[in-house]
Length: 165
Image 1: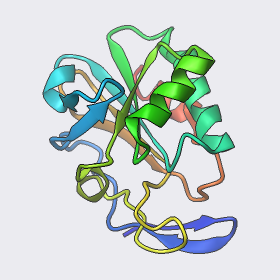
Image 2: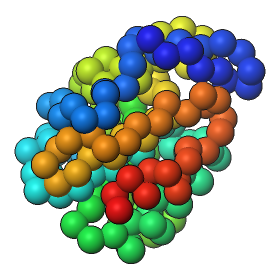
Image 3: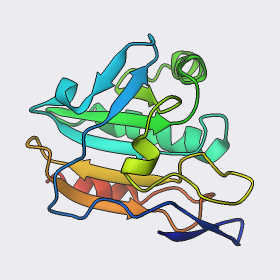
């Protein structure tokens, strides 16, 4: 499990991020149209997983905006915003912000958080997903991971994007 913080208070996750060099695990999430999405839907594409606790927080919103901006510059790459938020909340924010270069997916009825080791195991945020980034190549091989050490901190965008070069 990962040891992270929320405003300097200790928080743990149920596991650890996938190892660099491993293949992304199968996942089943729900898009903003309430349709199931799995890793097979993105076969042949590079993927950036922007994982966060809730789109209704400022840091999560900033990360979604930044990855949306950067995604427009990437070839054959999809940015997946993943959280436990309901699809309606994800859609509301992305539509209001004009975020059309990312795809938002909900784990509200899935096991992504457990399978990828990012479900928060304790603290007032128990059950939500931690802030993390996973980058995979077009074959689904993990190139980069970041478990952001402080939930209230933005991820290292530059390192994530450089992993695709």
